[in-house]
Length: 112
Image 1 (cartoon, rainbow, N blue to C red):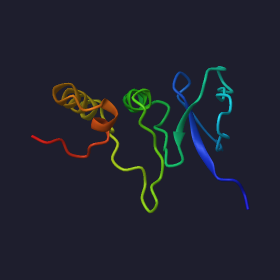
Image 2 (image 1 turned 120 degrees about the vertical axis):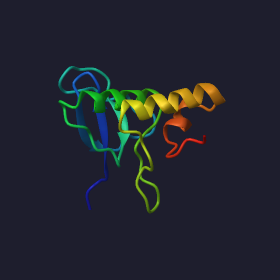
Image 3 (image 1 turned 60 degrees about the horizontal axis):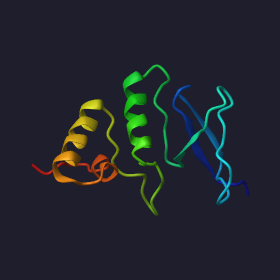
């Protein structure tokens, strides 16, 4: 039986790497391309195409806010915004309500 794998992302290189789960308390992983630190994105992550500038900008906001792409028991990671307009709407909502940005970003529907 093989070990489960998860995705790590290098935002500057716009690259994703499937690797084994890191042991608790292990050192950060480095990008094989630029040597920068990889961000653990989660096992349910699907990278945008390298040329998809907007997709990578959205992903950058999500990852820097602490949003990850982990599978639930029987489901995927849940809602994640795909466009900058969806991100902006959730950022505006978070500022107006005081809700943490990470929570607002994963809201499928915003209250009116």
